[in-house]
Image 1 (cartoon, rainbow, N blue to C red):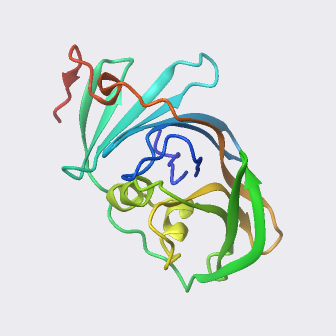
Image 2 (cartoon, helix red, strand yellow; image 1 turned 180 degrees about the horizontal axis):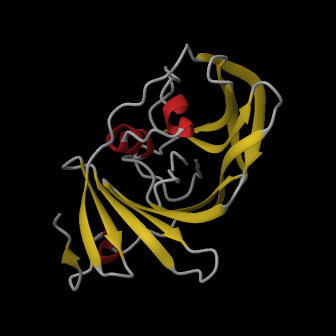
Length: 212
């Protein structure tokens, strides 16, 4: 579960956007050299739930609930019917310097125009290209900051400054600088403007809290 972000991952649409930001659901894929996982964000105002699905069964393997009113995260294990409080990770240490470049290219992702941003770090032998939609995805940056994940997709995205409020990558690709080898990829595959039920954004009442 921790290998996804979702930074990651990544999205946008004119429909389902209010003055406060996007409300609805966003399906995206995260892939690396070993595996591909399917994920869904459910967003309603300042509550966000991230579900990760099993490739084999299609069932939910695990979830995170982000409450941006209280700046808290909860994890959920549906198989064991338990939940717990997720602590924000310690900030990642970046070796060398990340160089951020706004490219001149644009790309349509799920019918949405995105601008190219490139983050390169020679010492870490890594370059990540982000295709960023600039709209009302106000939930995304707060989640990245709250979760504070250490994967490069999340860390390098945080190096981009000056983005309009509500910006979010719909597609991002991480590669090795030395040979161009693909490492990870995040891509939105569906955006739904139907507002999720509040019950879907809460821990089920029959789940027990897990205490260490």
